[in-house]
Length: 320
Ligand code: NAP
Image 1: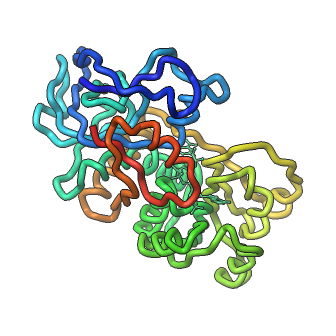
Image 2: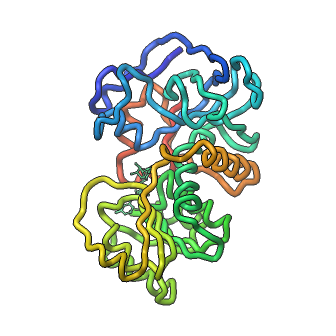
Image 3: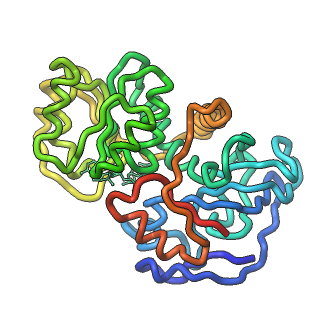
């Protein structure tokens, strides 16, 4: 089969399309023929070995894909060959024609959902769900700011929050992005490149501020988030690309929480709950991943450039 292989850490050009043996499912494992593969910012960090977190070399990148079950190992009960599935985490790597995953990583994909949308589920939507409900304790009736709502995680968060009955404010850096954020269910969209754009939140919330902020770029926004947070509000740090100097008095003054989250730390029980909610959300149509670009698998390098460009909007997927 064709697969993208990384034999040295570095820029996008280290992603090479190669012929490799098709992996075989062991006990408790599932072989999936991929029809689409999700590209996430974390794939670029691992490729570049940021913070020495890169996988052992050589490796096939990617955790997210969707396709049709081709084979199952002993003891697999929840899926069978021919089933449409999306995959969240793999054993063999997702940037490939086929991938082996553990049974718990394989989830049913409703017939109304495309494979590209299935490949857009795992990291973006599971992160959005875990941040909003497990870490942020978001509840119906609360007001949410999705600070960076036009990307994969942000669109997921907007849809999940709206379906739960929250009031949603989202930000994006372009007109197209703000239109997308409104189309996906946000009540209001703001421009995070405009001067004093957060002042508008005071007006939108009648001076109270927002109960929760899902923060996609904490090194840029964390300090100013406290200016628009309600008393006893929570900021969930999802994305961060640098260090800042910040006065903790801002948290003290509002009994506010800053809560970090990494999807990697979700427990098996939390992951089972997250995916049960996502499978049902896809089935009933409240979750509708937005695909921004589809590229052939051989253009994985281009996809890694694109996923780090501002204003790309919607999910980037590779088609094997
Ligand atoms: P993405 O699709 O590339 O989206 C990035 C988002 O950030 C876009 O909405 C972008 O808006 C927005 N943004 C750009 N400048 C901003 C600013 N100054 N203030 C607020 N938002 C800004 O990425 P993603 O997949 O949604 O992931 C978002 C971040 O979360 C990434 O840093 C990713 O690494 C991280 N992440 C963390 C976890 C975890 O477990 N903690 C899991 C998944 C992702 P415009 O392009 O419209 O300007």
